[in-house]
Image 1 (spheres, rainbow, N blue to C red):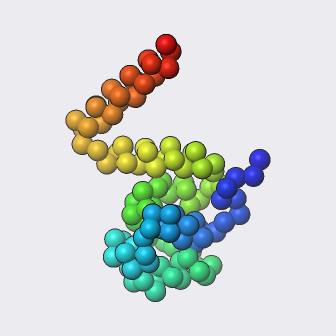
Image 2: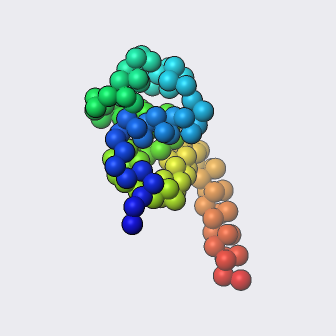
Amino acid sequence: MTTWNAGKSVGQKIKLRRKHLGLEPLGLSKKIGITPQRIWELENTSTRPSADILLRVADALDVSILYFLTDCELNDVDEDILLVKFRKLSPEKKKLAIGVVKLLIEMEKL
């Protein structure tokens, strides 16, 4: 089965996700503390980012680093994004989110 991002480079995936979020290169560069020129290089050349920069990009784009390193299904990325956002919640909000998920699971059984 071919995945939606199969064969795309790390740079292409960065650009795809950035555009999906409506984020300009300047906005991304400010979020992660690198120049807009460096964003352009990452997206448009075969330059590979350092692990540190890739982690910062993933955080800024609300994805796991796995989004850039694997060919995964779109649903897997959606679940991954949800997990990334869940990890940023306060302990109280995590408990609430877990409660909601448990309720939804119980409703599925009906």
